Length: 119
Figure: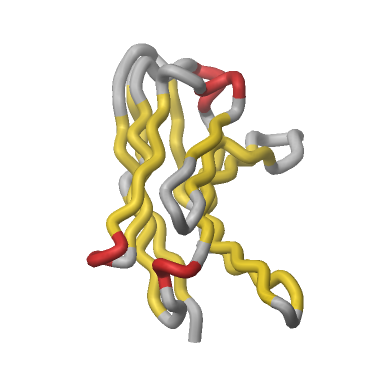
């Protein structure tokens, strides 16, 4: 059974920092691309940051220079370091694991963790 468990969300003041973690089980973690998505109330889910199995990263323009995604394959964990947080970063953040093989594309989602940026 695949599980992605996010942690690290919470309430933070504008300009503050948070570090999200996503612990994966039930998959061969090092084979998967990992991503962080977010969904704000009334908005569509959007990609925040992603890291491939090889370690290449990409970011949404809105978070470039402020957020950093990384992965620890030994711990089956992906991280999202968020700095200089803004109120518009407020959303539920979801972890995603994605792999494309001959048989097709397979992806898994975590349950989400709330991040609220407010004074």
